[in-house]
Amino acid sequence: MHSLPYRKYKIYVVTMDKMQLRKSESRIAQKMRPQDYEKLSVFILTTLEQAGSEGLTLHDLVQEAQLKFNAEFNGNVSWYLLEVKHDLELRKLILKTISPKREQIIRLNSEKKWWFN
Image 1 (tube, rainbow, N blue to C red):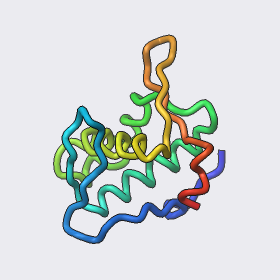
Image 2: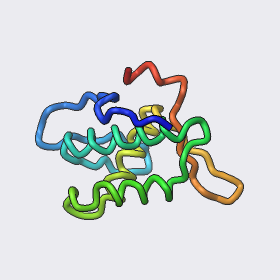
Image 3: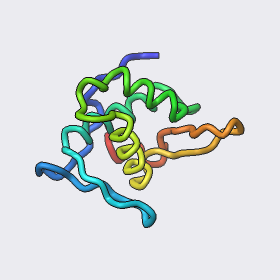
C-alpha cells in the first residue's frame, strides 16, 4: 500500500468560526470548526482510499483516528469523527453497509470520486 499525501483531498468549507454540518431528518445539525472538519474528512477519505474496495470497519476507523488525533481535539475525537462521517454519508462521498457480523463497513463511493479531485 502506498502512502498518500495528506492534502490530496480538499473539502471546501465556509470560512467562519464554526460550520454547520448536514443532517438527516432524525438528527440535530451540529457545528464544528472548519479546520477540524477538514482534518477529519481528509483523514477519512485518505484512509478509505488506502483500504481499497473492501473498506474499513467503523471500529477500525475510530481506533486509527484516536491514535492519530486524540491529543489534538478538545473532547472525544470519536464524536467529531462520527459527525464528519455522517456528513460525508449525506454528501454521498462514502457508503455504509452492515456486514454479516453486524459491523459497519465504510467505503468510498466510487461514483462520487470526481467530486474531490
